[in-house]
Amino acid sequence: MGKTKKVGSTGRFGSRYGVGIRKRLLKIEPRQKNEDRKCPNCGALTVKRISKGVFHCRKCFHEFVGGAYLSQTLTGGIIRQMVSQKKFVPELISQLPKTREELSEGEGAAAEAAEKASGSNEGEVSPDGDK
Image (cartoon, rainbow, N blue to C red; front, top):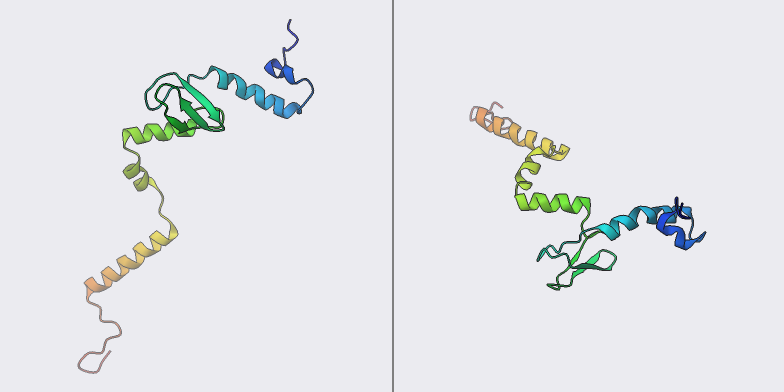
């Protein structure tokens, strides 16, 4: 059995930095090392992490941003897929619930339209002098 059964690659830190940070690093490191980083511009597997969230393709020299440790976050992947399918805007807007302001504006406009359609002359004086 190896010495680092529980601590894995964070065994190199010994007792430094605290347990929480070492456990967090233990979750991130394997994903960061084993990820196939494809360039979104040319598709080559030549992407290198420059700094937090900044990645650089060594083939086409394209720089792009992603997650702090991974070149593409889960949310970013979902958004990119939705944009490529071009079906997100009209459907999402129609599915959004209306706000109170939109509902009250809609009721006010509907009431005004109904009032005009019924021909109500509320507040106007007729030629006979009656209201």
